[in-house]
Amino acid sequence: MAPSAEHWRENMGYRVVVVGATGNVGREMLNILAERQFPVDEIAALASRKSIGTEVSFGDKTLKTQDLDAFDFAGWDMALFAVGSDATKNYAPKAAAAGCVVIDNSSLYRYDPDVPLIVPEVNADAIVGYSKKNIIANPNCSTAQMVVALKPLHDRARIKRVVVSTYQSVSGAGKEGIDELWDQTKSVYNPVDDKPAKKFTKQIAFNVIPHIDVFMEDGSTKEEWKMVAETKKIIDPSIKVTATCVRVPVFVGHSEAVNIEFEDHLDEDEARDILREAPGVMVIDKREDGGYVTPVECVGDYATFISRIRQDSTIDNGLNLWCVSDNLRKGAALNAVQIAETLGTRVLKKG
Image (tube, rainbow, N blue to C red; front, side, top):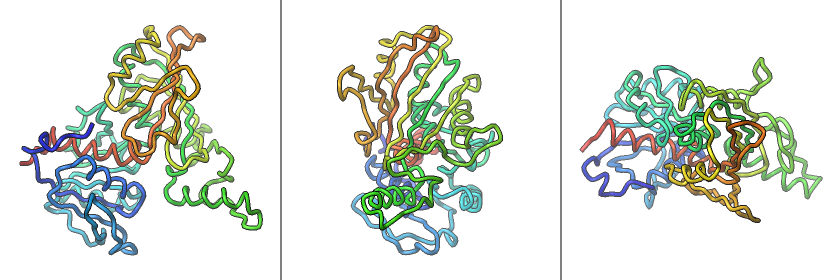
């Protein structure tokens, strides 16, 4: 639930920068900052030189993007970065050195031991570690929604192992991914207008691709490795995780089939009750036609939706569940704004 205006009254007055404001995630960051009434005194929308002057929306206001290369971060409180690792590597240290706290959505700093990797519903206390580099990392989209579901269950029965298969939408690959699915879908019905794969390694329309990011030496992809490493850093390094990450022909919304093995027995009914009370989680789990959530229904929502909670009878202490979330929101922009809120209420406390 968004903090109320009264909640922020004593701590108003943040100067906020959104870097990469013309991209899908950057625009969503601006939308969510406005929706959640984040206490902004001044906001700057930055983009690359080729996008200078592009107009973006912030609530009922229209902002013109400024040149990231020429921007002076001194005097600004926090910067939400929604650009790739290469640009982040160049500009984030400059912002941090100027005293502006960086909240980074790229993968660049996620595995740095001096940079906290934060999902506020899960490990908000770790945010105090930001002071080492003045940088906070936002996790991978597929990890963010999963750990929101895992943490309350881990607190109750201690997770030993997680086996997860993801069904990830094309928006996770940016605007080019969305455009490719759209163009290929149309070309299926118009064979004359063939649209070969460019962003993805194979046709994505009416297909699924078990390949996200680059392959690693052990045969896993980097997306799969990210889920392993990030879950350990965010929740508990002793949790064993194995993942298969798959791109599917869905525009927005990541889904995950999650199998969990616990140290202690956890009944499915108790798990359902725990998740119903968990922050950021919405349980919709009826054993009937349509009694579960799919990506189409999660778009635009803040929640991580959990369905299909059931015992796994093949192991002593196992559960299965289905996890769905808007990857542009909880998987990226929303989590970054929630980090900013946590930073404001727990650390900066301006006013």
